[in-house]
Amino acid sequence: MPPLIRRITRILPIALGAFIYAVDDETGFPFIRVNNGNAILDFLNDPDPAAGLTYQINIIKNGIDTGRRIFSTSISPLSAGRVMIGPIKLSVGDYSFAVAQTAGALAAQSFIIKFAAAP
Image (cartoon, one colour):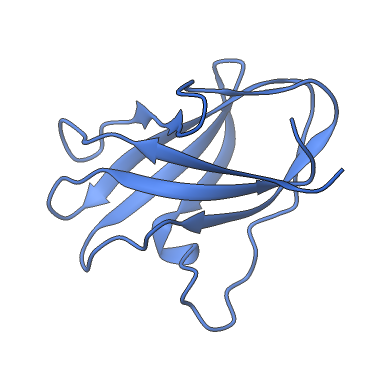
């Protein structure tokens, strides 16, 4: 099965540092269900945030923080020599992405996630 690519968007925040669940642009759901073993292969800004805007993304499984952190400064598709985030192995469950803007004027932000296979 080919990789699955999803775009998720975190709406305009109410304040810096406020974590808000991002939604899948295709389904409109704030989670992605994994029914069998899978992995996140890569994670990219889409598009890169404007100058001075930074974000932190926490991966949540079944409502519990996994401790995995992704920072917008490390996932720019324009970075020469950028290291891919994954693979991050995923077991069966519902995964959400809690996103907080950490600097800059408040703005919505989107990300692309590449999964090993369709969840």
